Amino acid sequence: MRLDAPSQELVARITLQEYTQAETAELTGQSLRSVTRKYADVLDRLTAIFIEAELLDPAYGQSCQDS
Image: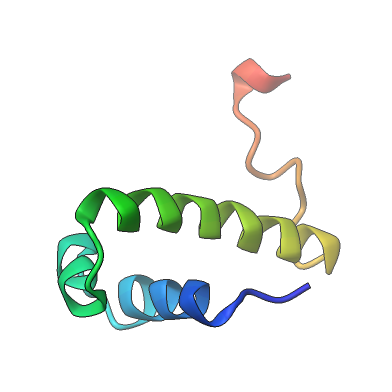
């Protein structure tokens, strides 16, 4: 499983290049609302990829309320 190119761009700009979500929206011609929603979805997919590849323990992110 891989992220598509637009998803990779969001991760690269926001996480690696440290652009804000507002700056990323402007650079990509999207609304801030779209970037915020898509970025949250991308992080969920990326987390699933890491768990599937056993690079992340799914129990690590659980809060006390999840137990």
